[in-house]
Amino acid sequence: MITAGADIGSSSSKILILEDGEKILSAVVIPVGTGSSGPDRAFAQALDQAGLTRDKLGYIVATGYGRRHFEADRQFSEITCHARGIAWLMPEARTIIDIGGQDAKAIRIEPGGSVGSFIMNDKCAAGTGRFLDVMSRVLEVDVSELAALADESKQEAAISSTCTVFAESEVISQLAQAARREDVAAGVIRSVVRRCAGLVKRVGPEAPVVMTGGVSLNPLAVRFMQEELSIPVMAASRPQLTGALGAALLAARELSKLKAGAL
Ligand code: ADP
Picture 1: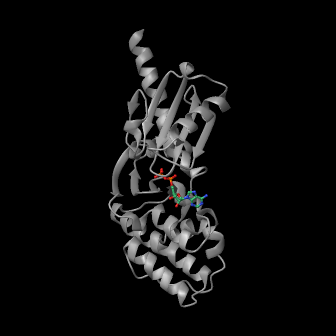
Picture 2 (picture 1 turned 60 degrees about the horizontal axis):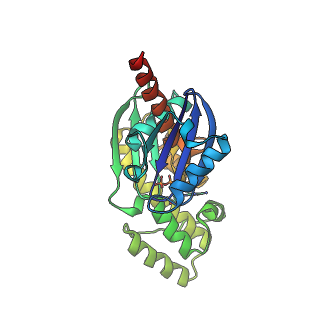
Picture 3 (picture 1 turned 180 degrees about the vertical axis):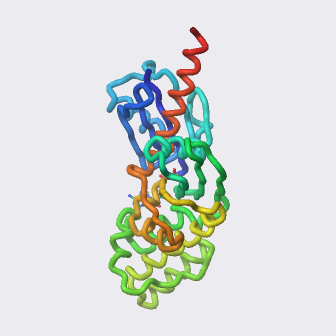
């Protein structure tokens, strides 16, 4: 039984192919999302890595912001898919913080992996990866290098603007006044994390807390989140793929149900 999960985000396209609901055959992340060639390229690469053709897939579940534009048997929300993926990887996790390119979510999960409650910010870029992308450009560093730059900081710069557009002007002006790039980088990461931590506090975070989504590839974001929440926080392994994993697991469940119904 081969199934696939497709997590089509605003910033990246993720495909994961699973055998019998337990063995990962391939997993691909392409750093462009819905509306681009990313979803098709990720899908083709995942099939290629697994040595499969599309007709071998028994069921496909799509999730993510662009899920309705991806051809699949069924769609599930990102909340359901992240919870399912984390429950499989780390059954002990009780809180998920997912920070992607365009939104952030805090999810409480019950023992067994069902979603208890969740809160989402999809209205404002300031608490999302987008803020880091914009500020990285101003700092002339790739977002994947932002944490390494910020790690050199001796004194975090304070970013007072809560709006991405105003914060960008603030950062440009700080740099023009000879602020150290590393201090600004640290301040920028702190700003995103503090906003998300406010969201997380509203769901009443319970340990163990795990971070998913592209922003958790930034080790300083994970450390700052731990500081802001005052409870241990860890990043999921391959955190951008958690939603696609959950989608592939849900696909396996749906296909098993179909097969059982056909008997
Ligand atoms: P979505 O699912 O919403 O498309 P992702 O979960 O892939 O988004 O997260 C995308 C965000 O993750 C980007 O906006 C960027 O800020 C951040 N990101 C992506 N790759 C890296 C990396 N290698 N290191 C640090 N941050 C990253």
